[in-house]
Length: 51
Length: 262
Length: 229
Image (cartoon, rainbow over all chains, first blue to last red; front, side, top):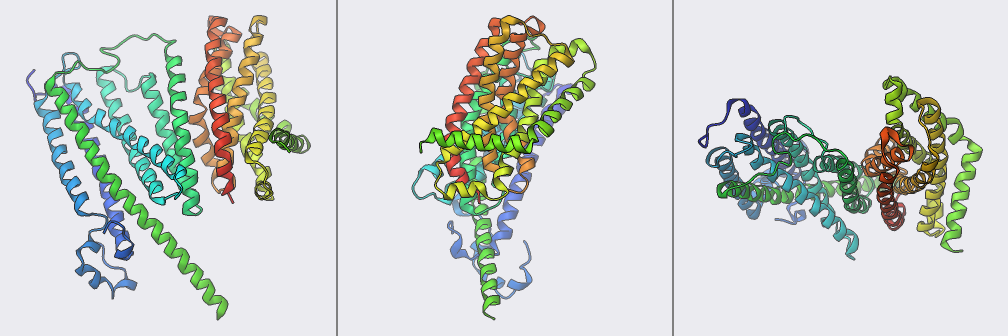
Protein backbone atom coordinates (compact mmCIF):
# COMPACT_ATOMS: atom_id res chain seq x y z
CA UNK A 1 0.00 0.00 0.00
CA UNK A 2 1.44 3.38 -0.92
CA UNK A 3 2.00 6.03 1.70
CA UNK A 4 -0.89 8.36 2.23
CA UNK A 5 -3.59 5.88 1.28
CA UNK A 6 -5.27 4.80 4.48
CA UNK A 7 -7.42 1.72 4.72
CA UNK A 8 -11.02 2.80 5.06
CA UNK A 9 -12.02 0.91 8.19
CA UNK A 10 -9.02 2.24 10.13
CA UNK A 11 -9.19 5.81 8.88
CA UNK A 12 -11.68 6.93 11.51
CA UNK A 13 -9.49 5.68 14.36
CA UNK A 14 -6.27 7.07 12.91
CA UNK A 15 -7.60 10.48 11.96
CA UNK A 16 -9.59 10.49 15.19
CA UNK A 17 -6.50 9.99 17.32
CA UNK A 18 -4.70 12.85 15.56
CA UNK A 19 -7.71 15.14 15.84
CA UNK A 20 -8.18 14.23 19.51
CA UNK A 21 -4.51 14.83 20.31
CA UNK A 22 -4.30 18.21 18.65
CA UNK A 23 -7.71 19.31 19.94
CA UNK A 24 -6.68 18.58 23.53
CA UNK A 25 -3.34 20.33 23.05
CA UNK A 26 -5.07 23.36 21.56
CA UNK A 27 -7.66 23.46 24.30
CA UNK A 28 -5.13 23.20 27.11
CA UNK A 29 -2.82 25.77 25.49
CA UNK A 30 -5.71 28.18 25.06
CA UNK A 31 -6.68 27.80 28.72
CA UNK A 32 -3.14 28.46 29.93
CA UNK A 33 -2.67 31.50 27.70
CA UNK A 34 -6.06 32.95 28.58
CA UNK A 35 -5.33 32.54 32.28
CA UNK A 36 -2.00 34.30 31.77
CA UNK A 37 -3.56 37.22 29.90
CA UNK A 38 -6.28 37.65 32.46
CA UNK A 39 -3.98 37.67 35.46
CA UNK A 40 -1.24 39.73 33.81
CA UNK A 41 -3.57 42.75 33.73
CA UNK A 42 -3.98 42.65 37.50
CA UNK A 43 -0.32 42.41 38.43
CA UNK A 44 2.45 44.99 38.27
CA UNK A 45 5.14 44.32 35.70
CA UNK A 46 7.77 44.58 38.43
CA UNK A 47 6.33 41.47 40.06
CA UNK A 48 6.70 39.35 36.93
CA UNK A 49 10.07 37.72 37.18
CA UNK A 50 10.19 36.94 33.47
CA UNK A 51 9.84 40.50 32.20
CA UNK B 1 -8.21 41.00 24.44
CA UNK B 2 -9.93 41.24 27.78
CA UNK B 3 -11.33 44.67 28.55
CA UNK B 4 -9.73 46.35 31.56
CA UNK B 5 -11.75 46.00 34.74
CA UNK B 6 -13.66 49.14 35.81
CA UNK B 7 -11.52 49.81 38.89
CA UNK B 8 -8.37 49.79 36.82
CA UNK B 9 -9.76 51.79 33.91
CA UNK B 10 -7.54 54.78 34.61
CA UNK B 11 -4.33 52.78 34.72
CA UNK B 12 -5.02 50.47 31.82
CA UNK B 13 -3.96 52.79 28.95
CA UNK B 14 -0.57 53.34 30.57
CA UNK B 15 -0.04 49.61 30.75
CA UNK B 16 -1.05 49.17 27.16
CA UNK B 17 1.77 51.41 25.99
CA UNK B 18 4.23 48.88 27.36
CA UNK B 19 3.87 45.87 25.09
CA UNK B 20 4.88 43.36 27.76
CA UNK B 21 1.85 43.91 29.93
CA UNK B 22 -0.57 42.83 27.26
CA UNK B 23 1.20 39.69 26.20
CA UNK B 24 0.53 37.85 29.45
CA UNK B 25 3.13 35.21 30.17
CA UNK B 26 5.01 35.34 26.88
CA UNK B 27 8.64 36.34 26.40
CA UNK B 28 11.04 36.17 23.49
CA UNK B 29 12.20 32.72 24.57
CA UNK B 30 8.70 31.26 24.87
CA UNK B 31 7.75 32.72 21.49
CA UNK B 32 10.74 30.97 19.94
CA UNK B 33 9.72 27.72 21.61
CA UNK B 34 6.15 28.25 20.41
CA UNK B 35 7.20 28.75 16.81
CA UNK B 36 9.53 25.74 16.92
CA UNK B 37 6.68 23.65 18.40
CA UNK B 38 4.27 24.68 15.65
CA UNK B 39 6.81 23.91 12.91
CA UNK B 40 7.73 20.48 14.28
CA UNK B 41 4.06 19.64 14.88
CA UNK B 42 3.43 20.41 11.22
CA UNK B 43 6.26 18.05 10.31
CA UNK B 44 4.84 15.42 12.61
CA UNK B 45 1.48 15.48 10.81
CA UNK B 46 3.19 15.43 7.41
CA UNK B 47 5.48 12.52 8.30
CA UNK B 48 3.01 10.64 10.49
CA UNK B 49 0.04 10.74 8.12
CA UNK B 50 1.87 11.20 4.83
CA UNK B 51 5.48 10.25 4.23
CA UNK B 52 5.99 7.36 6.61
CA UNK B 53 5.17 3.89 5.24
CA UNK B 54 2.56 1.48 6.59
CA UNK B 55 3.80 -1.26 8.89
CA UNK B 56 4.03 -4.88 7.75
CA UNK B 57 1.87 -6.24 10.59
CA UNK B 58 -0.13 -3.28 11.78
CA UNK B 59 -0.54 -1.65 8.36
CA UNK B 60 -1.91 1.88 8.61
CA UNK B 61 -2.78 1.61 12.30
CA UNK B 62 0.88 2.20 13.07
CA UNK B 63 0.33 5.89 12.28
CA UNK B 64 -1.37 6.33 15.67
CA UNK B 65 2.01 5.53 17.19
CA UNK B 66 3.45 8.84 16.00
CA UNK B 67 1.12 10.79 18.28
CA UNK B 68 0.63 8.16 20.97
CA UNK B 69 4.27 7.44 21.86
CA UNK B 70 5.31 11.14 22.08
CA UNK B 71 2.24 11.79 24.28
CA UNK B 72 3.29 9.02 26.66
CA UNK B 73 6.86 10.33 26.60
CA UNK B 74 5.66 13.83 27.48
CA UNK B 75 3.51 12.55 30.35
CA UNK B 76 6.34 10.51 31.86
CA UNK B 77 8.78 13.39 31.35
CA UNK B 78 6.35 15.69 33.13
CA UNK B 79 5.97 13.34 36.10
CA UNK B 80 9.74 12.92 36.34
CA UNK B 81 10.13 16.69 36.46
CA UNK B 82 7.43 16.85 39.15
CA UNK B 83 9.31 14.34 41.29
CA UNK B 84 12.65 16.08 40.72
CA UNK B 85 11.24 19.52 41.56
CA UNK B 86 9.48 18.09 44.63
CA UNK B 87 12.83 16.76 45.82
CA UNK B 88 14.59 20.04 45.05
CA UNK B 89 11.96 21.94 47.00
CA UNK B 90 12.23 19.71 50.05
CA UNK B 91 15.99 19.19 50.15
CA UNK B 92 17.31 22.64 49.32
CA UNK B 93 17.80 25.09 52.17
CA UNK B 94 15.84 27.89 50.55
CA UNK B 95 12.60 25.92 49.98
CA UNK B 96 11.97 28.00 46.89
CA UNK B 97 8.32 28.20 45.82
CA UNK B 98 9.60 28.33 42.24
CA UNK B 99 10.37 24.61 42.41
CA UNK B 100 6.92 23.96 43.84
CA UNK B 101 5.26 25.81 40.98
CA UNK B 102 7.32 23.92 38.42
CA UNK B 103 6.30 20.66 40.09
CA UNK B 104 2.63 21.64 40.08
CA UNK B 105 2.62 22.98 36.52
CA UNK B 106 4.43 19.87 35.32
CA UNK B 107 1.96 17.54 37.07
CA UNK B 108 -0.96 19.37 35.52
CA UNK B 109 0.53 19.02 32.03
CA UNK B 110 1.35 15.38 32.79
CA UNK B 111 -2.23 14.55 33.83
CA UNK B 112 -3.66 16.12 30.67
CA UNK B 113 -1.26 14.19 28.44
CA UNK B 114 -1.62 10.95 30.37
CA UNK B 115 -5.39 11.11 29.83
CA UNK B 116 -4.72 11.78 26.16
CA UNK B 117 -2.28 8.89 25.90
CA UNK B 118 -4.79 6.50 27.51
CA UNK B 119 -7.39 7.62 24.96
CA UNK B 120 -5.14 7.30 21.89
CA UNK B 121 -3.73 4.06 23.29
CA UNK B 122 -7.24 2.63 23.43
CA UNK B 123 -7.88 3.61 19.82
CA UNK B 124 -4.60 1.99 18.80
CA UNK B 125 -5.37 -1.09 20.90
CA UNK B 126 -8.75 -1.49 19.20
CA UNK B 127 -7.03 -1.58 15.81
CA UNK B 128 -4.08 -3.81 16.70
CA UNK B 129 -5.44 -6.03 19.50
CA UNK B 130 -9.12 -5.87 18.65
CA UNK B 131 -9.99 -4.62 22.15
CA UNK B 132 -9.82 -1.16 23.72
CA UNK B 133 -8.22 -2.33 26.93
CA UNK B 134 -5.91 -5.13 27.93
CA UNK B 135 -4.92 -5.82 31.51
CA UNK B 136 -1.22 -5.84 30.82
CA UNK B 137 1.36 -4.38 33.15
CA UNK B 138 2.15 -1.27 31.15
CA UNK B 139 -1.46 -0.19 30.68
CA UNK B 140 -2.53 -0.95 34.23
CA UNK B 141 0.43 0.86 35.78
CA UNK B 142 -0.23 3.86 33.57
CA UNK B 143 -3.88 3.98 34.58
CA UNK B 144 -3.01 3.84 38.30
CA UNK B 145 -0.31 6.46 37.79
CA UNK B 146 -2.89 8.73 36.16
CA UNK B 147 -5.24 8.41 39.15
CA UNK B 148 -2.35 9.04 41.57
CA UNK B 149 -1.47 12.33 39.92
CA UNK B 150 -5.10 13.40 39.82
CA UNK B 151 -4.87 12.90 43.59
CA UNK B 152 -1.66 14.93 43.68
CA UNK B 153 -3.43 17.84 42.00
CA UNK B 154 -6.31 17.50 44.47
CA UNK B 155 -3.81 17.75 47.35
CA UNK B 156 -2.42 20.94 45.82
CA UNK B 157 -5.94 22.36 45.90
CA UNK B 158 -6.49 21.63 49.59
CA UNK B 159 -5.80 25.19 50.71
CA UNK B 160 -3.58 26.67 53.38
CA UNK B 161 -0.54 28.85 52.84
CA UNK B 162 1.73 28.51 49.80
CA UNK B 163 4.46 26.95 51.92
CA UNK B 164 2.03 24.41 53.36
CA UNK B 165 0.82 23.53 49.90
CA UNK B 166 4.38 23.21 48.65
CA UNK B 167 5.55 20.92 51.44
CA UNK B 168 2.49 18.70 51.36
CA UNK B 169 2.49 18.27 47.62
CA UNK B 170 6.26 17.74 47.49
CA UNK B 171 5.91 14.83 49.90
CA UNK B 172 3.08 13.34 47.84
CA UNK B 173 5.16 13.89 44.70
CA UNK B 174 8.05 11.92 46.20
CA UNK B 175 5.80 9.17 47.60
CA UNK B 176 4.61 8.57 44.05
CA UNK B 177 8.21 7.62 43.19
CA UNK B 178 7.98 4.97 45.92
CA UNK B 179 4.58 3.83 44.71
CA UNK B 180 5.16 3.46 40.96
CA UNK B 181 7.76 0.64 41.05
CA UNK B 182 5.68 -1.30 43.61
CA UNK B 183 2.54 -0.98 41.51
CA UNK B 184 4.40 -1.98 38.36
CA UNK B 185 6.03 -4.95 40.06
CA UNK B 186 2.76 -6.25 41.50
CA UNK B 187 0.84 -5.84 38.27
CA UNK B 188 3.57 -7.61 36.32
CA UNK B 189 3.62 -10.52 38.75
CA UNK B 190 -0.15 -10.64 38.53
CA UNK B 191 -0.25 -10.69 34.73
CA UNK B 192 2.52 -13.25 34.43
CA UNK B 193 0.04 -15.82 35.77
CA UNK B 194 -2.23 -15.35 32.79
CA UNK B 195 -1.17 -16.49 29.35
CA UNK B 196 -3.61 -14.89 26.97
CA UNK B 197 -4.22 -15.38 23.29
CA UNK B 198 -2.33 -12.85 21.25
CA UNK B 199 -4.18 -10.77 18.73
CA UNK B 200 -1.76 -9.70 16.04
CA UNK B 201 1.39 -8.42 17.64
CA UNK B 202 0.47 -8.07 21.29
CA UNK B 203 3.21 -5.98 22.80
CA UNK B 204 2.68 -3.18 20.31
CA UNK B 205 6.34 -3.12 19.36
CA UNK B 206 6.98 -2.33 15.76
CA UNK B 207 9.80 -3.42 13.51
CA UNK B 208 10.77 0.03 12.35
CA UNK B 209 12.53 1.22 9.23
CA UNK B 210 14.44 4.50 8.94
CA UNK B 211 11.57 6.75 7.91
CA UNK B 212 9.28 5.42 10.64
CA UNK B 213 11.96 5.95 13.24
CA UNK B 214 12.50 9.48 11.94
CA UNK B 215 8.76 10.26 12.11
CA UNK B 216 8.70 9.06 15.69
CA UNK B 217 11.78 11.16 16.44
CA UNK B 218 10.03 14.25 15.01
CA UNK B 219 7.08 13.52 17.27
CA UNK B 220 9.24 13.24 20.38
CA UNK B 221 11.06 16.49 19.55
CA UNK B 222 7.78 18.31 18.85
CA UNK B 223 6.21 17.16 22.12
CA UNK B 224 9.32 17.97 24.15
CA UNK B 225 9.30 21.52 22.77
CA UNK B 226 5.58 21.72 23.52
CA UNK B 227 6.25 20.57 27.07
CA UNK B 228 8.90 23.23 27.73
CA UNK B 229 6.66 25.90 26.27
CA UNK B 230 3.63 24.82 28.32
CA UNK B 231 5.70 24.46 31.50
CA UNK B 232 7.10 28.00 31.23
CA UNK B 233 3.68 29.52 30.63
CA UNK B 234 1.82 27.49 33.22
CA UNK B 235 4.38 28.09 35.97
CA UNK B 236 4.24 31.83 35.28
CA UNK B 237 0.47 31.79 35.50
CA UNK B 238 0.82 29.95 38.82
CA UNK B 239 3.27 32.58 40.06
CA UNK B 240 0.70 35.26 39.28
CA UNK B 241 -2.06 33.27 41.00
CA UNK B 242 0.09 33.05 44.14
CA UNK B 243 0.89 36.76 43.91
CA UNK B 244 -2.79 37.66 43.69
CA UNK B 245 -3.53 35.41 46.67
CA UNK B 246 -0.92 37.29 48.69
CA UNK B 247 -2.25 40.65 47.56
CA UNK B 248 -5.77 39.62 48.53
CA UNK B 249 -4.49 38.58 51.95
CA UNK B 250 -2.61 41.84 52.43
CA UNK B 251 -5.68 43.81 51.47
CA UNK B 252 -7.85 41.84 53.89
CA UNK B 253 -5.35 42.47 56.71
CA UNK B 254 -5.24 46.18 55.89
CA UNK B 255 -9.03 46.31 55.90
CA UNK B 256 -9.16 44.66 59.31
CA UNK B 257 -6.56 47.12 60.64
CA UNK B 258 -8.56 50.04 59.30
CA UNK B 259 -11.69 48.67 60.97
CA UNK B 260 -9.87 48.30 64.27
CA UNK B 261 -8.46 51.84 64.30
CA UNK B 262 -11.61 53.64 63.14
CA UNK C 1 11.27 8.42 77.09
CA UNK C 2 12.38 6.51 74.08
CA UNK C 3 10.58 6.33 70.79
CA UNK C 4 9.23 2.81 71.22
CA UNK C 5 7.63 3.55 74.59
CA UNK C 6 5.90 6.67 73.25
CA UNK C 7 4.65 4.69 70.26
CA UNK C 8 3.23 2.05 72.59
CA UNK C 9 1.57 4.71 74.74
CA UNK C 10 -0.06 6.32 71.71
CA UNK C 11 -1.20 2.96 70.35
CA UNK C 12 -2.62 2.12 73.78
CA UNK C 13 -4.43 5.44 73.92
CA UNK C 14 -6.01 4.93 70.49
CA UNK C 15 -7.10 1.39 71.28
CA UNK C 16 -8.52 2.48 74.64
CA UNK C 17 -10.59 5.15 72.91
CA UNK C 18 -11.86 2.53 70.46
CA UNK C 19 -12.71 0.13 73.24
CA UNK C 20 -14.71 2.77 75.08
CA UNK C 21 -16.44 4.32 72.10
CA UNK C 22 -17.08 0.88 70.50
CA UNK C 23 -16.97 2.42 67.02
CA UNK C 24 -15.05 -0.58 65.67
CA UNK C 25 -17.42 -3.20 67.05
CA UNK C 26 -20.66 -1.27 66.61
CA UNK C 27 -20.06 0.43 63.27
CA UNK C 28 -17.02 -0.70 61.28
CA UNK C 29 -17.40 -4.46 61.73
CA UNK C 30 -21.13 -4.38 60.86
CA UNK C 31 -20.27 -2.23 57.84
CA UNK C 32 -17.71 -4.79 56.66
CA UNK C 33 -20.20 -7.59 57.28
CA UNK C 34 -22.94 -5.92 55.28
CA UNK C 35 -20.43 -5.35 52.45
CA UNK C 36 -19.83 -9.10 52.33
CA UNK C 37 -23.58 -9.72 52.11
CA UNK C 38 -23.88 -7.10 49.33
CA UNK C 39 -21.12 -8.84 47.36
CA UNK C 40 -23.18 -12.02 47.54
CA UNK C 41 -26.21 -10.20 46.12
CA UNK C 42 -24.11 -8.78 43.29
CA UNK C 43 -22.41 -12.08 42.40
CA UNK C 44 -25.38 -14.39 42.58
CA UNK C 45 -23.81 -17.84 42.24
CA UNK C 46 -22.46 -19.85 45.10
CA UNK C 47 -19.58 -21.52 43.25
CA UNK C 48 -18.50 -18.13 41.88
CA UNK C 49 -18.56 -16.67 45.40
CA UNK C 50 -16.22 -19.34 46.67
CA UNK C 51 -13.88 -18.65 43.76
CA UNK C 52 -13.68 -14.91 44.38
CA UNK C 53 -13.88 -15.02 48.19
CA UNK C 54 -10.20 -14.01 48.77
CA UNK C 55 -10.58 -10.91 46.59
CA UNK C 56 -13.81 -9.92 48.31
CA UNK C 57 -12.20 -10.23 51.76
CA UNK C 58 -9.52 -7.75 50.76
CA UNK C 59 -11.91 -5.41 48.98
CA UNK C 60 -14.04 -5.23 52.12
CA UNK C 61 -10.84 -4.66 54.13
CA UNK C 62 -9.83 -1.73 51.90
CA UNK C 63 -13.24 -0.08 52.20
CA UNK C 64 -13.16 -0.51 55.96
CA UNK C 65 -9.57 0.80 56.04
CA UNK C 66 -10.82 4.11 54.66
CA UNK C 67 -13.45 4.32 57.39
CA UNK C 68 -10.94 3.39 60.11
CA UNK C 69 -8.38 5.97 58.95
CA UNK C 70 -10.97 8.75 58.98
CA UNK C 71 -11.88 7.67 62.48
CA UNK C 72 -8.26 7.42 63.63
CA UNK C 73 -7.62 11.06 62.77
CA UNK C 74 -10.99 12.52 63.66
CA UNK C 75 -10.37 11.52 67.30
CA UNK C 76 -7.13 13.54 67.12
CA UNK C 77 -8.60 16.52 65.28
CA UNK C 78 -11.64 17.11 67.47
CA UNK C 79 -9.84 18.92 70.27
CA UNK C 80 -6.57 19.65 68.51
CA UNK C 81 -4.86 16.67 70.12
CA UNK C 82 -2.45 16.21 67.22
CA UNK C 83 -1.35 19.84 67.50
CA UNK C 84 -0.97 19.47 71.25
CA UNK C 85 1.30 16.45 70.74
CA UNK C 86 3.35 18.38 68.21
CA UNK C 87 3.67 21.49 70.36
CA UNK C 88 4.62 19.33 73.34
CA UNK C 89 7.57 18.11 71.29
CA UNK C 90 6.49 14.48 71.02
CA UNK C 91 8.59 12.67 68.43
CA UNK C 92 6.45 12.52 65.23
CA UNK C 93 8.02 9.19 64.26
CA UNK C 94 6.72 7.73 67.52
CA UNK C 95 3.27 9.22 66.85
CA UNK C 96 3.33 7.64 63.40
CA UNK C 97 4.32 4.22 64.71
CA UNK C 98 1.81 4.41 67.53
CA UNK C 99 -1.11 5.29 65.30
CA UNK C 100 -0.03 2.67 62.74
CA UNK C 101 0.06 -0.04 65.39
CA UNK C 102 -3.40 0.89 66.68
CA UNK C 103 -4.77 0.93 63.14
CA UNK C 104 -3.05 -2.39 62.39
CA UNK C 105 -4.59 -4.09 65.44
CA UNK C 106 -8.06 -2.93 64.41
CA UNK C 107 -7.47 -4.07 60.84
CA UNK C 108 -6.34 -7.49 62.05
CA UNK C 109 -9.53 -7.94 64.07
CA UNK C 110 -11.52 -6.90 61.02
CA UNK C 111 -9.69 -9.29 58.67
CA UNK C 112 -10.20 -12.27 60.95
CA UNK C 113 -13.89 -11.48 61.10
CA UNK C 114 -14.08 -11.14 57.32
CA UNK C 115 -12.30 -14.47 56.92
CA UNK C 116 -14.85 -16.13 59.20
CA UNK C 117 -17.63 -14.45 57.21
CA UNK C 118 -16.14 -15.84 53.99
CA UNK C 119 -16.08 -19.32 55.46
CA UNK C 120 -19.65 -19.07 56.75
CA UNK C 121 -21.29 -17.17 53.91
CA UNK C 122 -19.28 -18.06 50.81
CA UNK C 123 -18.36 -21.63 51.68
CA UNK C 124 -14.62 -20.96 51.57
CA UNK C 125 -12.49 -23.62 53.25
CA UNK C 126 -9.26 -23.19 55.17
CA UNK C 127 -7.01 -26.25 54.73
CA UNK C 128 -4.65 -26.92 57.65
CA UNK C 129 -1.56 -26.69 55.45
CA UNK C 130 -2.45 -23.16 54.41
CA UNK C 131 -2.75 -21.71 57.90
CA UNK C 132 0.88 -20.53 58.12
CA UNK C 133 0.71 -18.81 54.73
CA UNK C 134 -2.65 -17.30 55.63
CA UNK C 135 -1.39 -15.85 58.91
CA UNK C 136 1.79 -14.50 57.30
CA UNK C 137 -0.30 -12.84 54.60
CA UNK C 138 -2.62 -11.28 57.15
CA UNK C 139 0.30 -9.88 59.17
CA UNK C 140 2.35 -8.47 56.27
CA UNK C 141 -0.65 -7.05 54.40
CA UNK C 142 -1.96 -5.46 57.60
CA UNK C 143 1.40 -3.79 58.27
CA UNK C 144 1.44 -2.30 54.76
CA UNK C 145 -2.17 -1.11 54.92
CA UNK C 146 -1.73 0.42 58.39
CA UNK C 147 1.41 2.32 57.32
CA UNK C 148 -0.20 3.73 54.16
CA UNK C 149 -3.46 4.52 55.95
CA UNK C 150 -1.77 6.43 58.79
CA UNK C 151 0.45 8.36 56.38
CA UNK C 152 -2.35 9.57 54.11
CA UNK C 153 -4.71 10.02 57.03
CA UNK C 154 -2.19 12.38 58.63
CA UNK C 155 -1.80 14.21 55.35
CA UNK C 156 -5.49 14.93 54.93
CA UNK C 157 -6.27 15.38 58.64
CA UNK C 158 -7.86 18.69 59.43
CA UNK C 159 -8.91 19.63 55.91
CA UNK C 160 -12.41 20.06 54.60
CA UNK C 161 -13.16 17.57 51.89
CA UNK C 162 -10.82 14.90 53.23
CA UNK C 163 -13.61 12.30 53.25
CA UNK C 164 -13.60 12.40 49.47
CA UNK C 165 -9.88 12.95 48.97
CA UNK C 166 -8.67 10.05 51.13
CA UNK C 167 -10.05 7.24 48.91
CA UNK C 168 -8.62 8.89 45.80
CA UNK C 169 -5.16 9.03 47.37
CA UNK C 170 -5.13 5.70 49.20
CA UNK C 171 -6.73 3.27 46.73
CA UNK C 172 -4.15 3.57 43.91
CA UNK C 173 -1.33 3.24 46.45
CA UNK C 174 -2.69 0.07 48.06
CA UNK C 175 -3.40 -1.62 44.72
CA UNK C 176 -0.28 -3.82 45.15
CA UNK C 177 -1.60 -5.02 48.53
CA UNK C 178 -4.95 -5.92 47.00
CA UNK C 179 -3.25 -7.87 44.21
CA UNK C 180 -0.63 -9.54 46.40
CA UNK C 181 -2.80 -10.39 49.40
CA UNK C 182 -5.61 -11.73 47.22
CA UNK C 183 -3.27 -14.08 45.32
CA UNK C 184 -1.57 -15.22 48.54
CA UNK C 185 -4.89 -15.98 50.24
CA UNK C 186 -6.09 -17.77 47.11
CA UNK C 187 -3.16 -20.15 47.30
CA UNK C 188 -3.50 -20.52 51.08
CA UNK C 189 -7.15 -21.56 50.67
CA UNK C 190 -6.40 -23.51 47.52
CA UNK C 191 -9.05 -21.51 45.64
CA UNK C 192 -9.43 -22.70 42.06
CA UNK C 193 -6.69 -25.28 42.54
CA UNK C 194 -3.86 -22.78 43.11
CA UNK C 195 -0.85 -24.51 44.68
CA UNK C 196 0.33 -23.51 48.15
CA UNK C 197 3.86 -22.76 46.96
CA UNK C 198 2.61 -20.07 44.56
CA UNK C 199 1.60 -17.90 47.51
CA UNK C 200 5.04 -17.22 48.95
CA UNK C 201 6.43 -14.89 46.23
CA UNK C 202 3.49 -12.59 47.00
CA UNK C 203 4.54 -12.43 50.64
CA UNK C 204 7.81 -10.96 49.39
CA UNK C 205 5.92 -8.24 47.56
CA UNK C 206 3.76 -7.50 50.60
CA UNK C 207 6.82 -7.36 52.88
CA UNK C 208 8.69 -4.96 50.57
CA UNK C 209 5.57 -2.81 50.40
CA UNK C 210 5.20 -2.72 54.17
CA UNK C 211 8.87 -1.87 54.74
CA UNK C 212 8.93 0.80 52.00
CA UNK C 213 5.89 2.61 53.32
CA UNK C 214 6.85 2.02 56.94
CA UNK C 215 10.15 3.81 56.41
CA UNK C 216 8.80 6.37 53.93
CA UNK C 217 5.87 7.15 56.19
CA UNK C 218 8.02 7.58 59.28
CA UNK C 219 10.22 10.04 57.40
CA UNK C 220 7.34 11.98 55.84
CA UNK C 221 4.92 12.06 58.77
CA UNK C 222 6.83 14.64 60.83
CA UNK C 223 6.98 17.33 58.15
CA UNK C 224 3.36 16.58 57.20
CA UNK C 225 1.73 17.14 60.59
CA UNK C 226 4.11 19.99 61.44
CA UNK C 227 2.00 22.32 59.38
CA UNK C 228 -1.40 20.67 59.45
CA UNK C 229 -2.94 23.33 61.63
